[in-house]
Length: 359
Image (cartoon, rainbow, N blue to C red; front, side):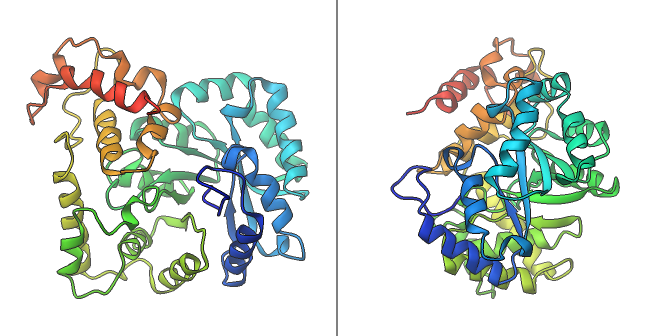
């Protein structure tokens, strides 16, 4: 979803530049390609199929997804798999996911019998491993893990987000249940690769000559539960850095000082947030269902991610309607329990206005 493009949008893909980067990555040993029907304005799968000609298809595993944004009934789900096989120019999708599962979309997938269709396609040899991706919180994530005999899951995880969404606890639960764990947003949409955020002083005090991106990637690879790290790359130099870091990383590769440095970096990021929420969860449950810590996390990330739409995308496309800030009725119950004395009722309308806006 982060291929080189012509212009400033998500499409059109710069086919020549993107194919060069992709084949360079495969030549360097990268063998897992993650796409979806919605990426790059619905052109990513077609590009992957074209770029993997000349023998490159046999060198990689392709992962793609069934997205609620492109299906509305059981027949759509069935047709989608056929269309994806054609777009990808392959007779087998190695890894297939239910995409961005929220509480809302999970009900749709269940009612449409999507998993039944996927399992039938697996029986025909058209699909290999079956999994799901989600940005939902830990309790619902654990419900998903237990709902089906999955092969793998895909979650957001980085040193700044270690306790939100599935988090370390959810990741360990999935791994202990036998699921392979694929990590998305290792650099938080590129934010953790920037050199203008509050963690830079912390990193400069270390004796490690690592870029911000390297710090984050090394931290993720230090977790034994992690099977694959999805890092968006759109230049040869990024491919080279990611490969180099992966080759020297792994469980136990970070020193105690390294881990303390990353703890300090996370603390610096947290202190820089506009709303001082620590995601302790004491405010929950909300009588209206609002996921209060998640709302503040998305808002803070939106403010920090100047020029990026990550926070808004997470709010509008990866959050169930019942969880959103718009449902707040200012009853005040949460404020009585908040140890940070945050005026939650006053902030929720502003959070919704900011995150739901496209301005």
